[in-house]
Length: 623
Image (cartoon, rainbow, N blue to C red; front, side):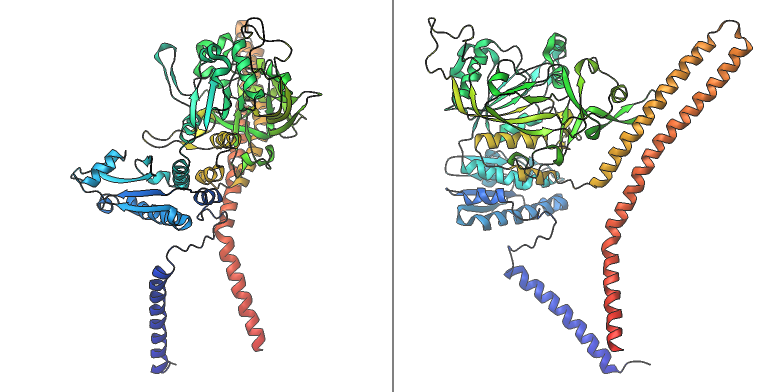
């Protein structure tokens, strides 16, 4: 039975009114609610971070941000134009939060115009994205009364780091006098020309430090010649001491007196530095891979295990190696560790929101009995850590062999620690050679301090790009898969007293993986690697026996029968190996499919159940 015409007309009118109301509300909201945001993401990643709010709230002088975007950007690249709109919206959020202390300007340079000349003079980069070849500009210039900073070109692939770039720019303009970080290192952190003409690029972590700090490298020879004058606590905010090996006595004394006078330090030592072996192979044979605390250990109240590194089956990093047949094989590396939330002091501000941290052949730190300093572990293994002798790793040992040789241990091993409190000078009882002045102690000598403040990390490979940075295609930015760089920067910020941007760096990481899948994958890989190691050893034994049988004289019938038996065992063992590897893939893929299905289907199913319940409830009420 058809409904009356008036009912159909009423329905159409209601639909038209609903559409008109929707359009009207959107038009009204576009003007009245401009600048308002509702962030419903789990970690509020679209809202301004507290670190950004602190930087904007502390602005004591006006800062101007000039967004330079060519009008032809939409024709050149619609995707780039979309990103430009998002950047402008984000800048409006910043300006709204800062009030009149942050001035936002927009400029669209035309070819051969004064605006284009200003853009070029300010360091912006014009890219020829159009057919005619005229450059397209999309950059940002920040300025105050005395200085300016530029982002030459805002790349869409760097959108996850946009807040970090903006806040860092504003913080630098708000406080133009950046903190001083003195770097004393036997590793070429800033790059170098190695033996044979090899060019060593700078570590990514070192380049990141240069963006936020005034980094001052001090050569060992200069430190030896100038002594304490090279490290003045009134000038240097933090000392970064990396891989201190074979330091002359005068250099050691200068470092000691810097700390006794109230200086702060971040120290990286390593019983087996793979970074040194990689970057300084010609020196590795002469001990370049090893560094220790030396005379500083008793002064600071801690020791570094000599000749041993930390292993942990539960934290072993997954690596991919090539088998003899050229196919990839995934293994767990016992002494390359991935440290997560449970492996660090989460109450320490340096870890605010950071992701996993990776270390390689890290050393083991222990507090000295009777020390007057406070030893606070920062990074540590799980309860099943096990010390591994360096001699088992050098020369390079097959990860499977290392894994098979070390079952789970029963120690929690400390890999990094804060050291604070009262400390005596390492040279309180005797001056090192070359320091005395006319046979007397030098003026201003400090014998102790009540305010020792340093962080010691027993690993230099935490700096090495191989352990935390994935290189993209040429021209593409590197992608961090671990928080090593953020962790080191957060420590320097905390030690120097600068604004902490670690939460923003963690946002930039942006990855929100299925952590349960990763945990199951690691557990399955560890379990099956034991089986694979045993099968591989059995296969090698059978192959040796077969070689011996084939070499038997005369080719007697028993020898041929033994060969056939061994050939069958080898085929069977290889089949078991394939099954073990296939089982690993199937376990992970099955869990992955289940979790993805649950993530996609859970909400719709809940909505259906809720709507069905409401419908049933209403029907019962009518009855």
